[in-house]
Image (cartoon, rainbow, N blue to C red; front, top):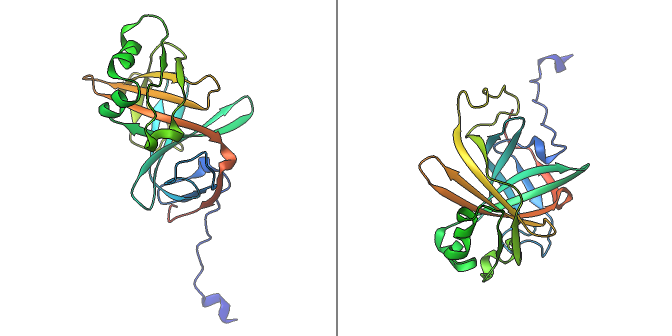
Length: 212
């Protein structure tokens, strides 16, 4: 009879898929040589969820942080009934010069045709994120970036309100296991990311945090 007075415990959130991750949640990757040492077998915490809005769709990006403070970005891709985990790291201008040379990389912006570029050097810290060469897959396209999780919200009208305008250039390796994403923002600021594409099954465990 006294059970009536016991406090009710809040049920633990269930995480069944990486697409359900929220800020404060964690995931663990398999221990594979496909990843650099700081990622293989590591548990990463979600520190932010961001939205890239396109004309007819949206993509959501999870900002992940390792115990050592390194940041990697995760987008989940669905194609032909398969799911993939796209892990990206940002690189700086000096890194671009070291890997491709700035002259080689500038051809992406200067040439009217879709560009093919070759990796000139493979610095050890980027080894797992680099392919021997890349081909631009399509012409640059525009999106709107929202520093907010819109998965359960109505997106703003495309081109009418909210978000930062961003032009995206995408290049991929022949087997599509690696890619380069270039984001050109209003004012000319440019961000370059190297992306490693892996099976979604590489995410071996999911841990709910305090998110509601």
